[in-house]
Image (cartoon, rainbow, N blue to C red; front, top):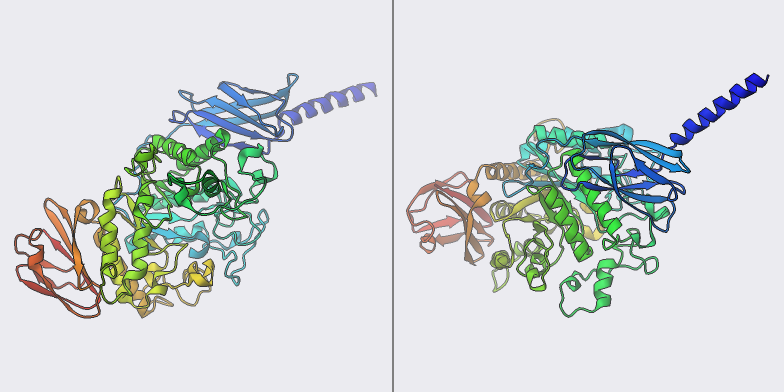
Length: 620
C-alpha cells in the first residue's frame, strides 16, 4: 500500500511538473521571425496571467533586454536574430528555478528573393476590392463561432460571406481585365458585433478574419496571384484598432492608446499636422483623437507600440510574400511615429512600394506626406512614404465631366490644373490615381453616361502615376454614398452561387454580363491591356496643353515613342487644329487611334473629334 502511494506521488509530481512546463501563454507576438533581417533585434511580446515576475531564458539566443509595464500580464523580451542559424529555440519562464512556461520560438530561413521583391509601380494597375463583397468561394466559413457577427446578406451593412477563396477563384478575371496588382481592404480579424465587414476595426493583427479564411489561405492567395504574375498588397491600419481588440481588455500599458481619459474624437483637421500657426490642442486632437468611438487611437509615440506595429507589418510582408502596402488614414498618425514606421519598412524592403491615404484637397497638403517632399522640408520633416493618393484628381473627376461649358476653372481645366501642380511633389510619377474607391461616391452614380466613364478612364490610364480601379468599376456598378457606405460596397454580381446574374462571365453565356456591363468591361479591358505594354505612358514625360472648348490634349513622351491623348468633354464635335501641337508632332505621321481603330493622319492641319469622345494615338 505504501509502495502504491509512493508511486502515485511520484507520478503526480512528474505529471504536475510536466504540465507546468507546458502551460501555454495567451499570446506570443510576433509568433516567429527570420534570420538575417534588417530588423534583427526583435521585441517578442509575451502575454499571460501574472507572468511579469518570472525569469526569462531563451536557450541559444541572446536576450538584449527585458521590459515590463505596470500590467503584470506582459513581458517584452528583445532577442538578437542576426547571424542566428534557422531553427527552433526554447524559451523558459521560471520562478525560483522552477519552469512555469516553456515554448519553442522558431527563427526561419529567409528566402533569397525576399528583400529584392519589386513593389507596384507605374507599369501596374491596381484592382481594389472588398473581400466580403467580392465573391463567396467557400460557404463553410460564412459564420464562425470565434467571432461575434454572423453572415446576414440581407443586411446591407452585414457580413455577406465574401472570402479569400472567392478572390482566388477570380484571379483569372482580374488578369484578363488588365489589372496587375490586387489591393484587398484589410483582412485581419475584426470582431465588432456589427458592421465588421470592412475590417478596418481590427481585433487581432496576427490572425486573418476566419470569415475570410486562414493565415495559410491568405498566403496561398498571394502564391496563386504570383503564378499569374499578379501582385498583392496589404491594407494596413497603424492609426487605430477596433474597440474589441483583445488588448483593449487587458492593456499592456495605459499609454498604449491615446487616453483623455477614455474616448475623444479626432477633429479630422489634418491640416493641423503641417500648419505653422496651429494651436497645440488642435494638432493634438487631430493626431491623438479617435477616428470613431469604436476605433481607439494607437499611441505611436510609445516605443513599445511603434515597435509592435513595425514588426507586425514586416512579419506579414515576409510570411505572405507581399508586394507592397496601402496605409489607411496615414496623415492621422503621430507624425514622427509614422515616419519611423515607414522608414523601417522601406529599410527592410527598399524595392517595394507603400502608398498612404492622405485624403486632402490641396496638392501642397498631399505633397507634404510624400518622401523627400520639398514642402515638408521647410519644416525639416520627412515621412519616408514613397507614394500618396491623388485625391485632388478625384475632386476634378467628380465635377469636370458634368461641366458642359469650359469656363475659366471648370471642365477639362480642372484636370489640367491638377497636373500644373506637379511641381509640388518630390515624385509625381509615384502617385496613386483613381476615379472612385471604397469610401467615395461611385463614379457611375455621378455620371450615368458611359461616355463620361470612357473619358475618365482614358485620362486615368494615360496620365502620370499608378492607376487604380475599384471592383465593379469595370461593369458600370453604381452606388450612392448618401445612402450609406454599404451602397457603394455592393456585392459583385455573380460572386455568390445563387446570384441571378454573373458579371464575371461575358455576354452570351449563362447569366453573363448584360449589354451595358459588357460595353464597360470591354472598354476597360482594351485600355488597361494596351497600357501594360506602352512604355511612354508608364515612364514618359508629360507635355500638356491648355484645354480649349473643353478639349484636353496631352502627350506622354519617350525618345522613340510618343502617345497623344485627346479628350473632348464638350457635347459637340470639335475641330482640332494640329498646328498647335507641332512642337511635339514635328513630323507628319499616319497613326491609329487605339479607341476607334481609325487611321489618323497627323500631317493634316485639322482633325475632327466627336462629342464626348477620347482618342489615344501612338506615334512611333
